[in-house]
Image 1: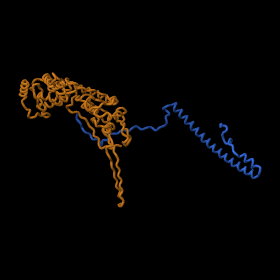
Image 2: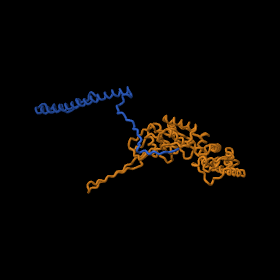
Image 3: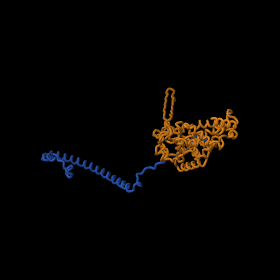
Image 4: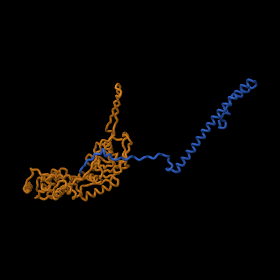
Length: 344
Length: 108
């Protein structure tokens, strides 16, 4: 018998700015089909490809309570299934006869279920995010859960020691590629029990939609930012970075400033240099790092020279109030920027 | 020693020599009578023990025959005639303890 204080389960809700394009809908439908057929789903891919958001979206569509676990190198089996984490002490003082004092005291260990046990026992949906950051031996318990649908608990636990996994239990995993720092190899037996959907960077429509939705900038500006990031991404060695997070960073900062997405805006150029971090693009020319030079070329190629629109403050002043220090007439800023650029 | 020469009859004792000496007189005959009676009693007790042992052996042989028949039936109908065992109950399933459940909303 386990001692359980309180169970905290999550009810996932989609934010209004969650973007659903045909690309995302296709992935979601496939994953839902696999989960409903009784198979765990595993989203794997580089950082910034939307694995965690997609896992949450699929879990929300399943309509059951969610238990969320993030993989960690320090995890052991007991961090997943539970352990002897508490004590129960009872003390009886019998002074029925005033001259006789009888004391009885007993201390017993208490088994406490952890999240994986809770999910298996009551049929919640488990999201095990970045599960390869846990060591493989910590995840061994998943083999029987996913294969035989049986959770085997240590013998120290009072009670039967076996728990039949609830029929409504389902699991969604996410992971980064093995070459990422802090990621462990996974046992083949575990990978064999799940259906892995390999995610790559989303298509142009999805990236623009997400950038616009998360930052609030106009579609045209979002498209220009995404074009810069996608073009810059192709210069990298493994084409993994910058990701859509860089698009959202650029969009949000532009919106916060009330700035423009224009090649002639030196502020925007500096912002791109800071966010896109040209250092990890290993492009050299005559022995010199040419990342920034290539970035300037991409900005020139993907952005208009100047922009005459200030739509952010007018469209959504509630979400992105521009600071006072940047409140200048846009035409002046653009023309000044253009002049500065030509001067440079 | 062969099997046919085993047993009480084959045991050689000094009894006949004693008989030959003592049966010439009356008191010798009485002594011999008492010895014969004692021997007869000993042999009768031995017969009773042997009969009890035979009864035990026959009972054990009957048990062995019954068990052999059961094992023959098991090997001929493998699976259907397995030793009788009580039906195992399935592992329990748990209902969500709603009174201990704390729900939290998470937007993604």
